[in-house]
Image 1 (cartoon, rainbow, N blue to C red):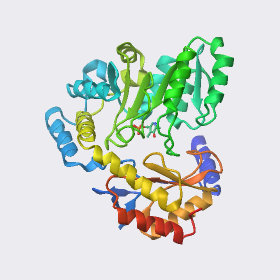
Image 2 (cartoon, protein in one colour; image 1 turned 30 degrees about the vertical axis):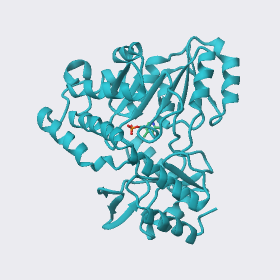
Image 3 (cartoon, protein in one colour; image 1 turned 30 degrees about the horizontal axis):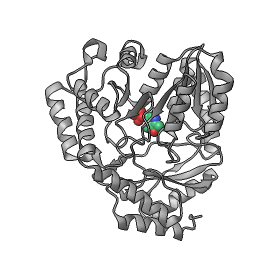
Length: 373
Ligand SMILES: *Cc1c(COP(=O)(O)O)cnc(C)c1O
């Protein structure tokens, strides 16, 4: 066997023994919270399409029209010939959304984090990040080569202690957190973090992947990145910041310079989604009130459209997910490495398209299966 096939086989066995080997499953999502898997229909509580915009007729129409005008692909990276006219419009919309001088759209949220962080930070610099930040933030930090320390989740006292002890030893300092934590659904104290950053001559950057379109942050970080793949229902990343920083990213962010621009249809879809979010604020309110109803029924905390049900061991979470499938609900078990060891959970996400009766049937099923605390 070729050496890497050998390695792959061994590693896959290890994962299998841990019950962590995974595979893709073809899933056909429909309008609303419905999907079909292995010929059966389920109500999904695992999509990040919080507002149901992935199938919204105006969004689909905007994509279709751009597809016919500009074609399927962008043809090149943005600095070459890929910067089609739709970008200007979306970037102006995003700067306005986030209250910044400028914005830049980039391939995906993942690509944004692994490109922007290394563009900003290098080996003489210091990065402080919340213990629970997303994998792509950690990858961006590693690529940057900067000194890196984590502070406890939302632990302002520990962040301040690290700033006090370490800030003076480095040139630049970047603090990284998420506005809404992707696996826990709770919120970062952005206002206090920004004050701390300014007090210590540091820059605060937030990842708003799960907040955008759902929850306005209590304060605006110096650099705000995010994605159109969650509440906006499409695909693509963005960063909003000062004109100087955006110009700097245009010249230094490798994922922007060396990767083909987003397809025109996706850029047009994102602009249509952002407009719909503003035109229909009731969509976000509905997603949040659905999450609130679920949490209230089960006595859980709720801060956003994400509500975790903590189960601990991997096997408990996978068994719980299987039990709910039998009731017609798709909820994925979230296990390490996506979350810390011993904190496997079901992560429920709520959409404006869930109906009250679906949520009440779901909470009843959770109680019947003995999963409620
Ligand atoms: C989903 C997610 C990303 C990645 O965004 P994509 O556009 O899907 O690549 C980045 N950060 C967080 C916190 C996310 O949840």
